[in-house]
Image (cartoon, rainbow, N blue to C red; front, side):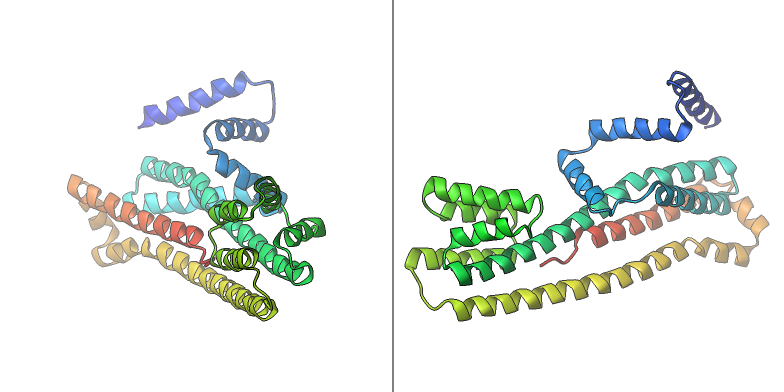
Amino acid sequence: MEFILIGIILIFIVTYRNSSGEGIYKFIKQQATVAYDTYAPYSYKVMRDKIKELGLEYSARQYTIQVAAFAGIAGAIGYLYFYNIIIAIVYAVIAVSTIPYITYLRCKRQYSEYIFEQIQVYTTNTIMEFNTTQSFIKALEGVVESGVLEEPVLSDVKTMIALSYEKGDVSESINYMNSKYPYYMVKNMHQLFLQVTKEGAKNTEETLDNMLNDIDLLVEGVYRDRSDRKQFHRQFLIFGVSLYSLIMLIQLILGVDSYIEMLDGIMMRILVHGVVIINSYFLLKGEKYYNENVGAE
């Protein structure tokens, strides 16, 4: 293990010495950017660019604090579980290596929340525009011209308009939008406008007003759910991290010296590693659930 760590350090030193004299922070950032551009999926790049544009991306200081916290907590856990500095370092490195994955999950959640807000704006404004124009296409054009939409929803609405004029029918444009944004309120609104366009229904004002009320209730429920989930997430992290301290209870009962003697056995070491792995997996699964199941609808 010592040789592996020394090898990693030597590779880093040689690579850094061959660079054009940049500061170490700038060098690491450039190397990370190259790896990110090479291996990150296109959808993630689009999402992260939007998150940066919205000002939600972590600053360098926030990332530094996150790295220090992960490394410090994991290193402390590794040492207090095994009383071995090498294992503590390995645990710290593994913990820091999960930060890109957690960043990816956080980015997906923020982007999903942003898209939901844009869809809310799209449906609400399209209904209000339709009440004025009594034309689905004119309503879409009014929403685009109003400047309330942002990318990528703005481009998709423009595509809807272009498809409608090209095909002479709104069906394909509606199918396009439904497939891109399969939200309950989008499908219901489109179904109503499709019926109005095909059947020439009259006196739709009351129905549209009811739909606006439904959207308001849905959005209220979503924001309430987000608030509850944030509170639960905070409590979940506190509980998950506190589980690591159970080993201290065992050491308190057995005594530190007796515990260290037990670690000499291979099965005991495997068991203790298993405790750390299972608890860490529990935390990552909880983080994944919190960020992916945002409860939009």
